[in-house]
Length: 247
Ligand SMILES: [Zn+2]
Image 1 (cartoon, rainbow, N blue to C red):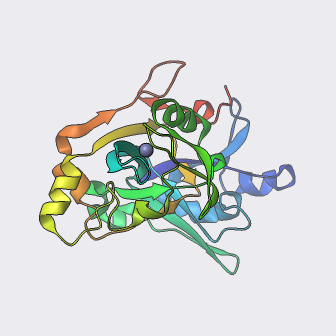
Image 2 (cartoon, rainbow, N blue to C red):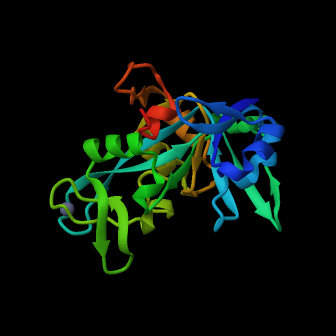
C-alpha cells in the first residue's frame, strides 16, 4: 500500500530529506513523502513530535462515531461523538530508530474501526474540528476530575460529559462488552460518518483496540454515510492543504 505523508522538515535539513526522496509541495509549502508505507519510517524524525514515541498515521479515511448516552446531570439522552480510525499504522520511535507496520500485513484491519479521541482540540485537523464543533456540542470545557479538556457536552443542559467513559465498557460508542446482544444493540444504534483525505493524517490521539472492533462494520453497515468536508471544491477527498487551512 502507498501513502502520501506531509513532513515537518526544518530548513537546514531539507537536503537530507530530498536525498531520501522527499518531494516539495509548492502550494502547501511543505516536504512530503509519497511511496510505499514500509518506507515511511525513514522519514520518522520529521513526522513524530519530539516528545512522543508513537503516533497514528491514518490512511485514506477516518470517521465520526455518533451514539447516545444518558447525561449524568439531567438524565436526558444526549448525543456523544468519538473518532474512528480505519486502516492505519503506528509510527514508533525507540532510541532514535523508527519503526512502522504496513497495514497490508494485517488485512483484517480493512473491516475494523478503532475508537479514538483527544482531549486537546489543537491535535485535531482544523477543518474536522470546525465540523464537529458545528454539528455536535463538543468543545473544550472544565471538569473537576479532568481539568480542561475537549469533550462532549450535553445537548440539553450543557454539562460536560467528560472523556473517561469513552473507552470503557459502559461507553455507548465502544465495542467493549462481553455480551453479544449488548454489542449488536449498541452498534445498530450508532451513526458513522466517513471523512476522506487525499493524504495520510498524522494524529496524536488516543486509540483503543478491542477484539470486537470488527463489529462496527458488521452491525451498523446501513448507517455509514460520507461527509463532504471541503468547502472549496466539494470533492469527497479533502486536500491536506484545506484540512489544515493552508488555502
Ligand atoms: Zn444534561
